[in-house]
Image 1 (cartoon, rainbow, N blue to C red):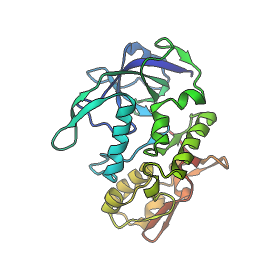
Image 2: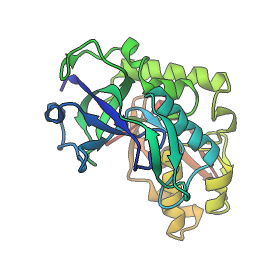
Image 3: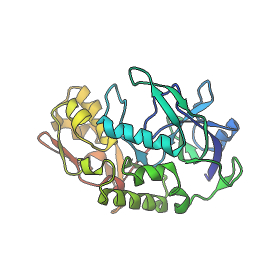
Image 4: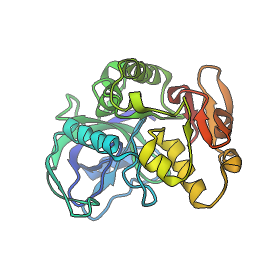
Length: 276
């Protein structure tokens, strides 16, 4: 399936966005039908929840817990700046945006809707040169102009790749990640994903350690089930992953090491491509 331009507006008022997902209203909602996969899920305002391609930011609200909140909030603020949303005010509980100058114009480049009915998209501010609904060839130069790329460039997002993202696009995004890591940008000076971190309970990963959000989510689900870390790898043994550098198809547990209470990933996030 080709990529398509869908023009519209970005929205956060009444929602709880984070740094890798935002609501979007298409100017012409029939254009959602151009995308492959299940129909995009639209709410009563015709807003779709986007899944921003290739990035994952620290969780602000996953199963009633969050990751170290400073970087999670910085990621959200940076994303909103990219799409021109200002004047954000939260409710007293910091669970919902009550005021914002949203409805800002922008567009997405997308070709599919994922299984949870979220369009998988690269997001851009402003007006594209192409017509609404146009078919486009998405190259690395265009990707570098996206909000997705800027989140990686700033060091406020982790790369998280899924099958279907073309190798040339992965390569340019991974180069941004490498530069951000080497430049000690954003969260990278605090990242413990590959050096290892001690898990003594939920607080250790919600308050103390900055780690890949996918790994955080799996640990939260597992720890809330009451299991000991000795069996954690078994809980992720069915999740398929490709080690990109060796083209080795394997499972998530083979790239996660558990030694006592210390957990770490043995491959960099940008060297992995997950299924689904």
